[in-house]
Length: 532
Image 1: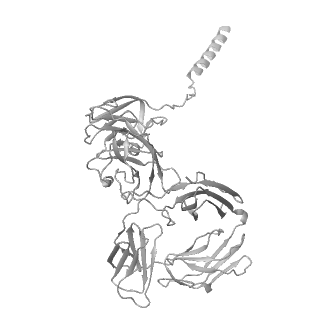
Image 2: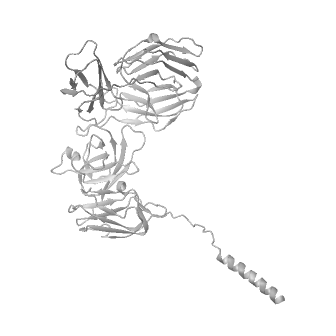
Image 3: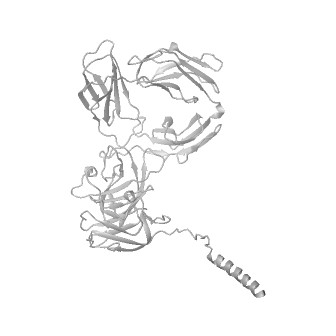
């Protein structure tokens, strides 16, 4: 009997032990991998000389993958035919490069993978990895570093190509429009650049925001920065290149009829002085208007009461004169659409306005009424802008007050003699405590300046011209973040002027205040802006 009890106990103990041994434990996970991949070998060797190979194999100590390599990889000097890089999209312990281009003799090449090589698990970056070789007897080892900024942007920019063109017997300034550079680098996700493996010599230095990534300057779409003086390598100098968008030489596009009574004249370059005149006889009730389209290089010619198969125009601009004919086919006319610039709150710094989709030919102020919350009529005046597409309703605003603006039918008449239906707008103003004040003391002013207050979205709030150190007061500001910039108005024309590469003109300097101005309601902030 005792034997049987011991036997049962033994079986129970054994089953428990076996059960415990068979349990799968929860893995602890261990330490997170934070080590970047390591280069094990390369065939041909990294920094090989007398290089003649067409295929390259680069091996690593762990599985890697290429991330955004099309954007990250920079080959210097650039190649006409891009090499084949594999594998893409899968993990591997090696990278293969097949060179399709003919390599120049006695030249050092650098394949800079940027931050595109990462390990397969945690994506730890093998930062700024380069494979270098020379088709000559030595590796060029000089370098040149610097920084890139942007004329009109306060925030850092990235992904900028920085290029060196070698001065030789065939060099001209126009080379950047036709040929790729001798050396190239890219700022990637930084504002800094480092051109490496350079040979001694004299160079032209430019920076490009290269939209189509062809390493050739296209003024229509690219931004450019340049250094006027020759860069001599080797040097200890570090430079900052400022990017800007050039104004193209004036060029008129073929005008098109957008709808009945509306012809679009597109153009490139400066259209500020562009003028369009209709040729031929017109009836006594003929009406027309010229309107620049906001944000577009387009001038719209609106007209009415003219039935013809085609129209001829004389187009004038600075150093430009041409006669152009436009065939008319459209029978559909635009519809009048009226919009206001506010929703429910009129800020103290703003003026109530009504925008029209079609130029306005007349308006009747007698059919407009403005009353406050006590139904008391408020005196106002009405002005129309230069393009006759916006009516401004000016009146003395009171704090914390509700208003009702009513526009009766047929108050507004457009160029096609369309009129409005009844319009009613209800809005109110805020209390004085809802706003804030910013005082900016601008010091070290030695030339004409333009001081601009902007929102973080680069929306202009206020602009002031000054010629000496002074304190500027910005009151009735909506609580939000603001930025301040100073334009060094060298030619004293009241606007910022861009640069020109071929004329070797830099853009006018812009200095941003180094702090974002955080304004809260009922606060008054004081800042000192030291110019340099």
